[in-house]
Image (cartoon, rainbow, N blue to C red; front, side, top):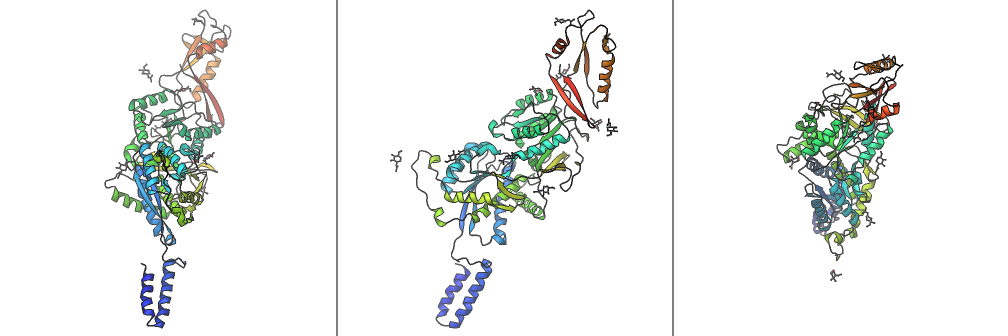
Length: 560
Ligand SMILES: *[C@@H]1O[C@H](CO)[C@@H](O)[C@H](O)[C@H]1NC(C)=O
Ligand SMILES: *[C@@H]1O[C@H](CO)[C@@H](O)[C@H](O)[C@H]1NC(C)=O
Ligand SMILES: *[C@@H]1O[C@H](CO)[C@@H](O)[C@H](O)[C@H]1NC(C)=O
Ligand SMILES: *[C@@H]1O[C@H](CO)[C@@H](O)[C@H](O)[C@H]1NC(C)=O
Ligand SMILES: *[C@@H]1O[C@H](CO)[C@@H](O)[C@H](O)[C@H]1NC(C)=O
Ligand SMILES: *[C@@H]1O[C@H](CO)[C@@H](O)[C@H](O)[C@H]1NC(C)=O
Ligand SMILES: *[C@@H]1O[C@H](CO)[C@@H](O)[C@H](O)[C@H]1NC(C)=O
Ligand SMILES: *[C@@H]1O[C@H](CO)[C@@H](O)[C@H](O)[C@H]1NC(C)=O
Ligand SMILES: *[C@@H]1O[C@H](CO)[C@@H](O)[C@H](O)[C@H]1NC(C)=O
Ligand SMILES: *[C@@H]1O[C@H](CO)[C@@H](O)[C@H](O)[C@H]1NC(C)=O
């Protein structure tokens, strides 16, 4: 019973005795109503509509347990906000800690839909979990909402799978701009291969690179359950090739092992470039020193989040709560995924209020006679209303502008970070309109990057594979000795001098060897075509364009 009702009841007893009192009491009730409802005329007896929302997370992972703390804070903050005090709906979260398995996540999903009758499910962290849940969501018309970067957009192309994270492809463009800036001609994507069809990022990356004339001729896939030996094999394959620019997208547990092995193989040293996609960059903030020790010089892209006063306050409150609930944690910083989790709950709470529920929406459902639990799941009318409202929500969240388009959060600027010591230095920004810059405010050069091998000189993007030399076939032609001559194992002549002069101008060593193509009797052992064929038949050729000033040098390299 509210105070207003109590006053009213007391006043009815008094009514019969004192006519005057009524007037005063009515005035009092009126004043109370105005204060409590902020001017609105809301019937005092109306109950708040509880909107149940399922949360499926693996709280043994960083993404899982940091984001859960964020979600709880979001709920507290939302309803503590004076402007939401008279909202007639209340979100209620139901956490199911499922671990990483797809089956566990699916059965938690069925339980939430059937028994709790949730209006939305937030959280699948992996693409396999998302695939199952997306199907459940489509069947029951309940929105499945994923804020995790590791959950690619192709997981569930249903109208009920919503990603409250940025479009993966937008970072592909940011990476391509970075590659273009340093004029790297070829890169190798290294990625976790959990389900080939899920990785939309790779084709998007290749498309974006094509726009800047960079090739991808080899991809390195790592299976999620790869053993150490599998990874070592993959790494030594990388090492055997020319390209030394790698773009890495994988979960952080796998990445941690991978970078350890790459370091052992000497691939975290001078000449190599490692760029991480945002799901991995994000986790740098959490894992701290053990991972950073093996990732010196790595560059990462991650969504740019404006550093506002609200955000700083939130970080503080979050840290306090997280440390309280996870004593002894080594955690250092909040991730962007955590901010998305916060904004997702905020958005759902807004959407619930705007959904325009009516009482009959929440009536009991028919009991279906079906063979499996899956078939017995009913479609949900209020969930459909919630979904429609969520897709229209538009506000300034803690991670930035929150607005969904094409079932994803609208993306914008990226930050480029560089791992130096225990620091994650912001070295640049990428904006969709103007590309790479050192500052978000104006066009400027990137801040100093410390590359692998602790060097400030940008790597040229390719290296001579170990034990490979450039093999140069020389024709033998009587009468043209001033052009090419091979004498006592030494190549001389005008052509050789020009070639040597060019090689000397290059800023790096070219291990090379001249081979005579003769018949042993002072003549060529065949035509030029045969020379090329003989020299090249067991080797592969690489053409590299090196830009020096405004001039391109084309260098033909051959592997023996
Ligand atoms: C949070 O995740 C980390 C990383 O897996 C784990 O070490 C930690 O124990 C987790 N915390 C809780 C409370 O489960
Ligand atoms: C989603 O559900 C609708 C209606 O039940 C069905 O026609 C459609 O094929 C489903 N889509 C997917 C991707 O499962
Ligand atoms: C993601 O972004 C890319 C390029 O920025 C665009 O082509 C694609 O349509 C977007 N995907 C969605 C689902 O919005
Ligand atoms: C090396 O590069 C060649 C051509 O550039 C490619 O065909 C081959 O698959 C690559 N192999 C590895 C192990 O990188
Ligand atoms: C439910 O299904 C069972 C077996 O499939 C059938 O025998 C029964 O008649 C069905 N009941 C209704 C109400 O349809
Ligand atoms: C992205 O960067 C541009 C240029 O600095 C800025 O005008 C714009 O407001 C930024 N967008 C967001 C969402 O921060
Ligand atoms: C950095 O790299 C450049 C070019 O590869 C090299 O000349 C220079 O000596 C390196 N500097 C250090 C400190 O290793
Ligand atoms: C390079 O050559 C040396 C000696 O010829 C050999 O021991 C080594 O295994 C070779 N390395 C590779 C990567 O082939
Ligand atoms: C000349 O070429 C033939 C085949 O093309 C080869 O068998 C022969 O060994 C070559 N002679 C010399 C001296 O290399
Ligand atoms: C190349 O650039 C350097 C300085 O960056 C300049 O001194 C030199 O003249 C340029 N060479 C040509 C051929 O333009």
